[in-house]
Image 1: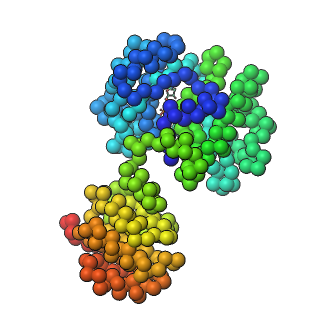
Image 2: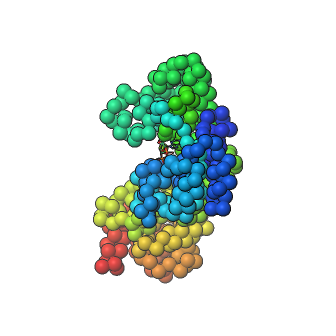
Image 3: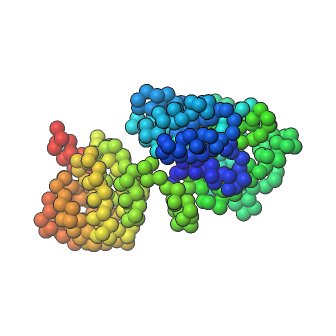
Length: 397
Ligand code: ADP
Ligand code: MG
């Protein structure tokens, strides 16, 4: 789960990580008081969407920049252009994201920009801190072209972030002076504590800055949480912004289904993430395009399968459905009963190909054959994918 910059910065404050003052507002009539409450003459007006690259983004009506420096007099006018408008950045895709909140912050005098992030390092299974003196840049590009500008530090979970690691990173970034090292220590310790106690999957500060008057501040904040740990953090769940998520994905998560919307026209209903991936691959192999990733899980019952059909059918691009279920712990007859009931419940009219394999498969197939519902059965994964791709292609010629 992702949150907005202004929410991430509230967490930063809680953990003692220095940020510029700021106020987030959701309606125009709050603009003036928000701007008046900030110090200095210059304000940075920031569109709040769950995507980076806002500074270089463009709104659908042509207005340039989702992050803009302005005088106090101009700030409200700029915010008016952003609020309710749709911002397209490198990370949003062409449809962009609608701005529902504008964040006003005090502008900082930037002497130098840095990159800093904490994430789970998959090769070691530990938290990694990535720091770079090339701030404000695309970090993947820096890693490729000038890897010497990046330091990666792995933190051992049992002993936590060690003082020598803090100093090593600090010297690397050029914070060797006593006063800077003190500020740096507070920031990196705070970030590590935030990451650890809130079960984050990533915390990114791009840029971290040094100001002309020698203060180290987090100017941007991107925080993502491990969905599997959210049950431990009701306070984080409250930060969820449903406008930033696909309503179908939220609906699916209520029923324990793993659903990710894609832009093809063949809906897939599969049990197990690995099988779901290979089903998508093989649909592609036969020239089709999957409309989604859907893992109904190992213990899918009739209700879950009915809900899964409902969710798939909310996607108006869907022209056919492929059900590919392996009955391991689950028996195929139970799955067949679920599919039959679900198809009748939702009144399915789209072409449906079903491939069942595993325990009690013969009984399951017989049930499907005798159910009277219109479907095509398949014997293997390849057979199933080939059939649904062909049917959908023919019906939509
Ligand atoms: P994004 O990464 O989505 O483009 P940022 O918050 O990083 O958004 O803002 C883009 C750029 O705007 C930053 O790299 C920085 O140069 C500038 N900026 C952002 N906030 C401030 C601020 N408070 N003071 C001065 N400059 C800022
Ligand atoms: Mg940024």
